[in-house]
Image 1 (cartoon, helix red, strand yellow):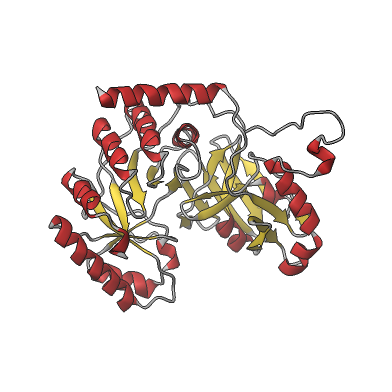
Image 2 (cartoon, one colour; image 1 turned 90 degrees about the vertical axis):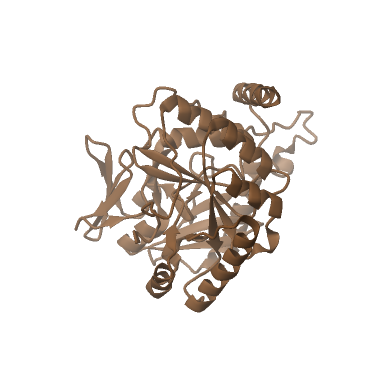
Length: 397
């Protein structure tokens, strides 16, 4: 009864949120700059981070001389300097003119196609950087003809500040309404997207994964939601086990979920150190639950590990996984995270490894999303040692 009441309240909240516009949230803002020009800032053009990668609308590259074309099958091709990348958002693949495939697909969002920054810049000989300004981030893409990053931030400081203030609705006296007798107009968040209940396509399967240390406050509600939906997930626990809540870890394993380990590593980390950290974490996991794990992810992506590091992990019996889509549950309301994730589900028939977190919004988001998956018949198999891994390094061992 209590679970049914929670679901009814959650659905009612979702319906209310879908009918009203809420004040703009105080989430992180990312601006886009091309060479020395700051692009207009809006929710429909702001860069997005998915699977540890930064994405921008493909039109950003068009302004740098990269030509774009689409065929009748919905494949977007970007070309410059004799190089081509072809993205199929429907099938979830990307390949170049030599038919080499890559692990960072494009996504349909906000009425356009978002493409991966790192891949496109590397392929077309462009540079990119992330700059900090006024507590926010500027993603800057250049073709080598622009001024330095420091000079850009210095020369554009006023423009950057105004863009951030305007977006957040905190612009100065010119728009404050002071002395005009008018009430200042506050910007509003865009409406929550409508979820298509009869999509033309759907993912072949969705692996549900939770990243980070579980919370004694929020994770039990997440486990309740998974149990009610009859779904299992993989929980990527930090290799540093000091933040693990013992009882929650025991419950995760007892209810049939897959325990996994999460590294915080880069190419400079010694392979022996990685193995030692995983061994220590497995000792703790075995002490708490009686079972170790060989499922591993790297928080910044397994492609950030060197071949030697990956070889050492695989030879020690570990299998490498990465998420391919972030649900947004840690930065958005449950209703918005659900709606945007369902939209992305409807844009692909590929396999998705969905990254979730342990935020206060996650349990309700899981309820909404698993309900949608049930209606669409989308399976969510359990990640096991025998499952072929999905990772950004395309390492299937």
